[in-house]
Length: 128
Image 1 (cartoon, one colour):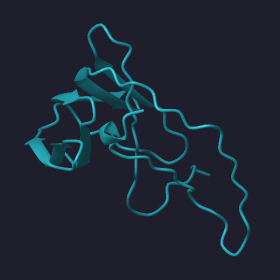
Image 2 (cartoon, helix red, strand yellow):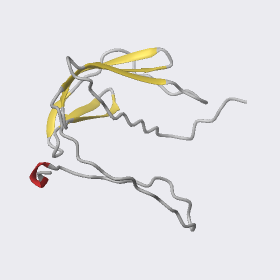
Image 3 (cartoon, helix red, strand yellow):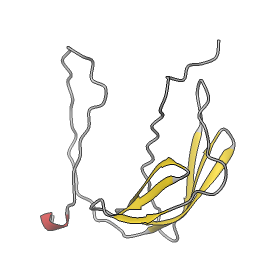
Image 4 (tube, one colour):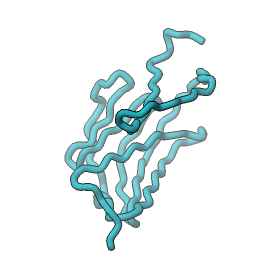
């Protein structure tokens, strides 16, 4: 492994119970070679409504979207690459379970993306 090529390694333990011990086991962590790729025409669908993110994400880049007016692509070191304007209606979460779908075009590679959704406001609960 060439350590000069590693940008980061993050391990997270989310929502541990307050005041209680937590036991965590880790399997071996392996460094896999990175195949450079570009994701295009990113689409997020919630509740049958699809929003297109007209950007190209190169390997290591990431997109943060806080609203339709605040959508930015950052490079691997956190540098702002561009500001984007989503197309289509911004999907909204509804009370109860929500199905979210992510799709994109990636060319000839079997590309992967990590999608994180964070909601704001009062908790959504199922309708009575």
